[in-house]
Image 1 (cartoon, one colour):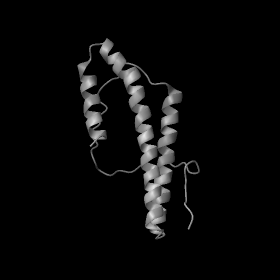
Image 2: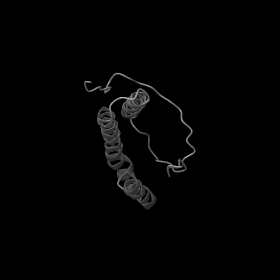
Image 3: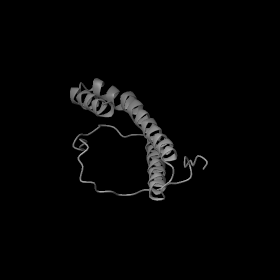
Image 4: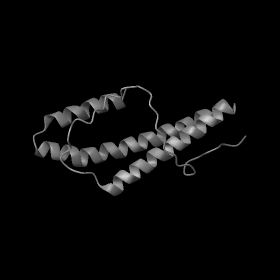
Length: 120
């Protein structure tokens, strides 16, 4: 079978209550707002990656070749890493710059914890 890619063909949003705590709380205030276009682009990329992951799930359900599934999982991981990189850069350029200006050491501590979670 040929390689099956879903890079730009699906856009889905799903709510999943996994009951897992991912260590992120929303009890802090950024003190500024993110660019709506940038935020929408990130949301779109995440939705696309979610659609791609659902396509990979369907591949497994359809008992597709393991090598093809692994290739597609790598593509999903790459897409998620790309989104993480965009968010991290934006966070450093805006949120952390603001935090430094406001002497907010907690924001830097949160960034360090997030980086520790990202890179394990």
